[in-house]
Length: 205
Image (tube, rainbow, N blue to C red; front, side, top):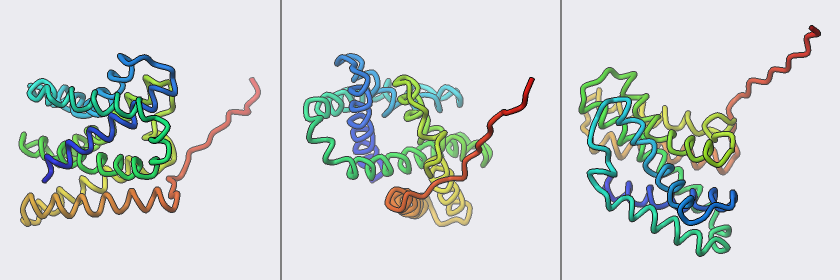
């Protein structure tokens, strides 16, 4: 089940990334690169940091074709995509929780400390979007007031906690997806925001 959700997630992430590239007037090469970075970048950064090889997209090059295809399809149907904004926000939420759990699973398989397991999940879930926003000259969503990175941390925490209690990977995965997805969808629906740090330096020199 998790593998199917992963394919859906990387395709949806690639399609939304294509729209970001389009807003910056990129050509089809740029669209594909932004799509790859968004959909597969989080896992790539995680693997580099954990010294885990081969990369997922090297081991499964078909993921490059799936994401590029989704991105180009979105570019062709951009006018229709605008009407499906809420759907892709929900699919992005699915991607966030699925990527987080996959990142936690990998770190757990490497028998890393709990804190590193949680960070691995968060990096996998959020880093691709950060790279997309940086390349598109936007402030990354992770660093803004939206409830996004917090959802990743909660999702990873639920997954690790249930595994620690001995309920098994399948139960932990299902519960973490349900809780993380519900939290992110509620945050989107009710526009929940994290507290902001506002600082203005008015001191006279």
